Figure 1 (cartoon, rainbow, N blue to C red):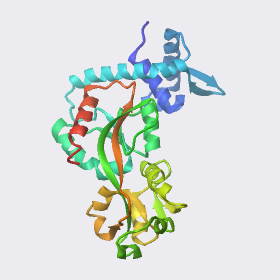
Figure 2: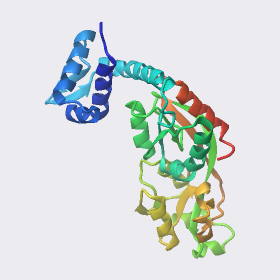
Figure 3: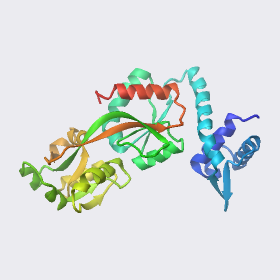
Figure 4: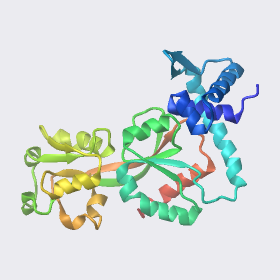
Length: 294
């Protein structure tokens, strides 16, 4: 059997793009060359890695089994390259993270990481649902998420605890009260992140269940947009205390005092079958070590 790294890269690219043409473009190859490499790989393994239905490719059970093995081999080969490479500043790992983490936690971490390890990882920013999908497709090496995951294919390691708070404009009538009741919150308008975001999930699972029928005035995928609407007294929001404490925002908003406190756990997440290179292990160790200084 003469399986090559090129064939495995072609296979993983097809898995990622679910399309021969896009896979060819990403690898700077012709579509014909992609087809030939896939056919050769399937012939050598004597299996169908994809089912062909109406000109579309669907990953077969055999293909699903090959993904972690192909990923590990390619990562090991890249470890050899990086060990003897003089381009130490190039990214060695691909890290996914949610928007809250990317904006309010990651910059400080990356600055320290570069100073200590000498390079910056490639960062992919999206909502939690999308990040989990990329981990399952081996498009990311590892991720930082604002919540635990329920997907049995993903492994979680605790990183740090974050407090979530209810915030209003500093000119909102609620700021004149010492404490805000749940009936008052229920009658208020809410400006929230999109449904698949970790922040929205936490709102629905922790705070919304204490309200009879919370009114969602706007659903936005940008913290700046959310806070601008809150600033103009169009509603309340539920955000990380780190966001509220940021110097760009804190003077314009007020944290409302309610009966309960809400805490969530940030996690380091990766596919359970992912081969953890030394660079990935270094990233995990660094993140855990830095949890008290974020």
